[in-house]
Structures are given as structure tokens and as C-alpha cells.
Length: 549
Image (cartoon, rainbow, N blue to C red; front, side, top):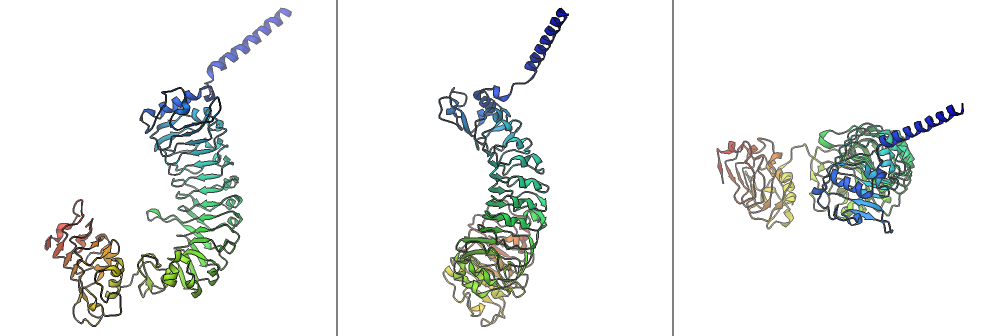
């Protein structure tokens, strides 16, 4: 029996040995078993280090602390604590060993390498990694990143992520700053967003998130910046956002790209009265309805500079007089259904960047019956022009037929008329046919006569946009702007919208004549001594019934 037991013990020992030996030879070595230098060489080899923009000292010395982009601590046995190879033409896939082996690295910056891919398999071993910057790379997936629980700051902006955020992502509960703007992330934002309670900055701008904004955002009470603009939400504004007592900036602007607006926010505009730190509120291009609450941002320090953008919603009523409490407010409200501005607001000299002092109410919004391209007047911009058909404050276009006077005034401001060499009678109550350079079909003493000639040659005109309004003069026969610093965009013209026969734009700063073929009645065209380049536009030779110089 003793011999049998002895043999049995021997067999068991041999079995243990076999098992141990088997696993010793079949388990792949972990990244920790590679030296720091071996891991760095693997990174160099697998990301085409020979073609990096800078690879100074890499693989040429034993002291890797002197290699480009590597930061070591100052101890006798130096450890790598930082790696910065941003915008350095790395191409390929970052080896998983980088996370698992260089476990003392606190900051890893690989942003701006647009052909660089990632494997997050070993990120859980990077116990000291606090800041990871991999924006503007070839990143398509963040699978595995949830194990990087030591991360405090994560930059994922301008990548190629298209799916919804995986549940593991919300295990990064130590995050303070998260940037993932300009991707194509889809789906709804999970209620698990509420797990990231240490977040102070959250940037999810310009993605394709949809559906409801989860109320769990209200659990992120340390947030100072919440930037959700440029998405496709179909949601009311959760009242729980009122819990974000440290919030300084809130943006939920609706997506507007590629003429494909999202559904947008709906319902009433909250007053956010409890957000005492909020100085920037951006909710434009949504479907918010009702009136502006008199208590809007009533909790903030009114001596601060406050910016509110509510452009292009469905808000109505009057801008409340109670907003007078703000000393320095920039509020944008164009494209709504605003019917009035409390007069005392038009005396707030610091409002709208100080423009209210110069332009009064028009600096807040052009009034009913008026418009300009911005919907309000500011320094260096055009004034609010007449448009009788516009019913509300803040119109940015006019669909009514403009009079010759209105057209000439718009042209005057677009071409810096106040600084012309000669501008007698322009923008005055004098009949337009008495204005310098204007000739009419008949009576010079009446606006009833049609403008037929505009001759402003060598008159110090200066302008590069909105000059095309001059072509809306219905009976204009001749336009001479020779020897002025002007450029025009003919692509905005409608075919047959002018009877112009002679156009002189020689010695100007014209760079492009695409669309000029729409001036179908031209007999004489002068374009000498300009900066036009490229091919002639299609249809240009259809103008050849006239003379081109």
C-alpha cells in the first residue's frame, strides 16, 4: 500500500508539473514582460517610424528619455510618464502593449495622426493614464476603452465613430473632461450618462444623436460646460438641467448641416433661474414656443457679460422689460415671431457689444417693416432696410418688391458709400434721380421715374458682398463701376431679372464671373484688368451677340 501511495504521489507531482509546463509555454507573454524600450520599438515599427515628421534619437541611443516626444520622471531609474507624438505622421495601429506596458504614462497625446488606428485591449493596465488625446485620427471604434477607468480627460474629436456609445463607455466614471465633437455618433444618449458624476466639461457637438435628452444629465452636478449643439434631438428641455448649479455654458443648438435640420427642441423656454453661474446659453434653430420668461437667467450676476442665442425658434410676444437688469447682454432673437421690444432696453448702451448706444433698438433687431442680412444693425454692417411686408422684428430677408430707392440705399451701404469720392444726395430725402451718378428715364424731381444708368467710375467704391442688389433695378440699362474695388457674385441672379445692356467692371477686383450668362440682354461687357481666373462659365458664349472687352 505504501508503494502504491508513493507511486500515486509521484504521478500527481508529474501531472502538476505537466500542467504548469503546458501553461508556461502556451500563455503569450503579457505586455508587462516587454521592456519599455521593446514596447517603444514596437510602436516605432508598427506605425512606420521611419516616416514620422520627427523621430529624433529614436532607436539610436539607449536612453529613450532623450527620444522625441518622451517625458521621463527624474528618478535614478527613469520611468516614462508622458508620450507626445501629436501630428507626427504615425501610420498604422498603436500596439496594445503601449497601454499595458508603459503603465506609468500619465499623458498620452497622439492626436492629429489621421492614419492612426487603436487597440484598447490593455488599457485597463494603464493605471496612471489620466489624459488621452486621440482626436483627428482614424479612430472608428472605442470598443474596450471602458476599462480605462483611471482616465480624467479624454479627447475623441474629429474621428470616424458612427455607432451609438457602448454601455462600457459609461464605466469611465473618473472622467472630468470629455470631448467627442465632430463625429457621426448615432442613436440616443443612454440614461447611463448619469454615471459620469465627476464630469466638469462635456462636448458632444456636431454628431447625429437623436431622440430625447435624458433627464439623467441633471445628475452631473459638477458640470461647467455642456455642449450638445449640432445634433438631431426631438425633445423638450429636461427640467433636471436646473440641477446643474455649476453650469457656465449650455449649448443645444439644433443641427442645420446639408439642409437637413433636425426636429429640434420643443416646448416652452425655461428661465434657468437656478443656474447662477450660466453666462452662455445657445438654443438657436429649434422649435421653442411661447414668450421669453421675464425671469430668464434671473439668478446670474447681472454685471457679467451674458450671451444668449435664441435665433430661429418660434418664440413670440415682446422682449420683456425685466431684462433691463443685465448690464452687458448680447441677445440674439432674429427669425422668431417677436412683436415688440420694451423701449427701455434700447437705452442699454453696453448691450450687443456696445452697438445699442449707436443704433438703438435696431442693434437688437430690425423692426417690423424692415430687414437686413443679419436681422439687426451693428458696427460696419448695413442698416435695416425697408420691407413693408415683414411683420415681425428681426427679419433677415425681404420677399417684397423693392423700390429703386431701397435698392440704391442697399447698394450704397454695401459699397461703403460714406467714403465715396462723390456721393452728393445719396441716402437723403432728395429725389433719387438727383443723386450723383444716377440717370433716370424722365423726371429728375420725382422717385416715380425709373433708374436707367448708374455711373460711378473711379469713385472709391469698396465692397465684396450684396452689391448684386443693383441688378434688381428693373429698368437699368447701363452700369459702370470701372476702377473701383468691388467684386460681385452673379450666381445669385435670376435669369431675365434685369434689362441691363452695358456692364463695365474693368479695373476692379473681380475674381469670378460664374453666373454672368444670366444677364441675357447684355450687348457690351468690359472685364479688362481684373483677377479673374479659371475656365469661362458654361453659357458665357451665349452672350456673344454683344461685345466683350
